[in-house]
View 1 (tube, protein in one colour):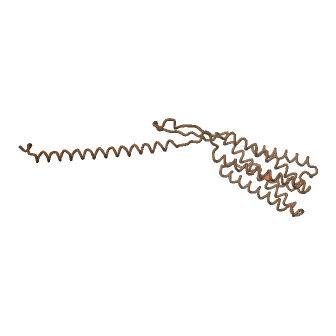
View 2: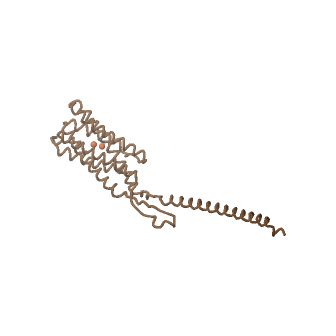
Length: 258
Ligand SMILES: [Fe+2]
Ligand SMILES: [Fe+2]
């Protein structure tokens, strides 16, 4: 009898719809949670898509970099001492040359300091015969200056000719042998064709290249300055310049290895 009571039926329907409503709410919550989970999955997938890996330098590439930093630090230290020797002798006899010599010397000190920092940063051992470079360089600078100011300038011309060529040779290797593969990888199966391969010179090598370029240009300015100040009037020009060029080549060979 109760079942036929319209009021009972209405009450039951209300309960029925109330249960449905709860179910719908639960279903919506599940859908919402599922969407959040999916978006989290998508977010983590997009992070892995942008991952880039540069191939590390090989042992041979590292060894060459160490050699570059070692020999260039020794060379710039030598240049610093050559100008010290020249300034010590010439600034008293030819005071008008002082500002020109000081300008070139200050640039050499900057070159030397830069390679000192690179040596520490990359933990490259200095040349084991550094004291010989210091003594040899100051004797070369002061000795040629004692012959004449033209002979001192011929010394600068010879040194900067060899150093300019030496830096160009290093730049050729660093620009051509240090393009490392960059791999862009993706783990997301929904992203088809997400991978690819390019090449990039590592930042540390790019920095070294930019410094060597800058110093090479300044060395060539020193070469021009020496010619402007009558390096080619030195007597005996050919003997001085060829001897000094050969000494520099031997010094470079030794400083790279010892
Ligand atoms: Fe220099
Ligand atoms: Fe120089």
